[in-house]
Image 1 (cartoon, one colour):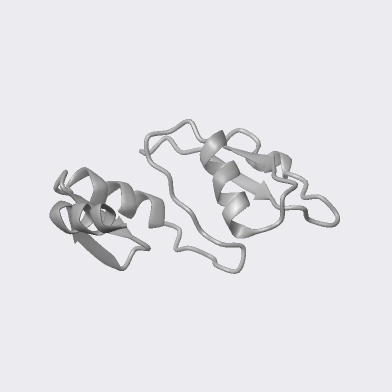
Image 2 (cartoon, rainbow, N blue to C red; image 1 turned 90 degrees about the vertical axis):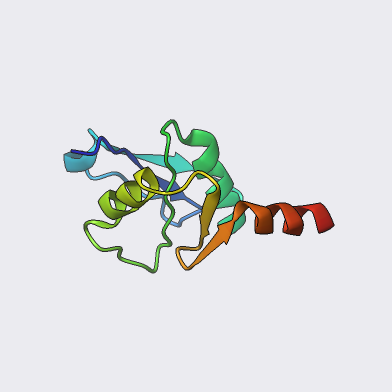
Length: 102
């Protein structure tokens, strides 16, 4: 079983989000008063305490097993690879070339 915690980022919602008490043992709300997806993601990263971070957007409903599948994929991944946006896998040499140029 995967021990997971969830942070829901309230990005200046009107009215503010309220946490359903039935999920309080594994979820929390993090308030981010600065509007924008970048600010919400940064607030989530700053509040995170786990080894793996996973993001989804408010207009998405992920598959119930997406965290389990993602962690399993990371556990079997080669250390010199990075998955970006869940679509592309970049080799370490490619990443080094991209960031060396920029």
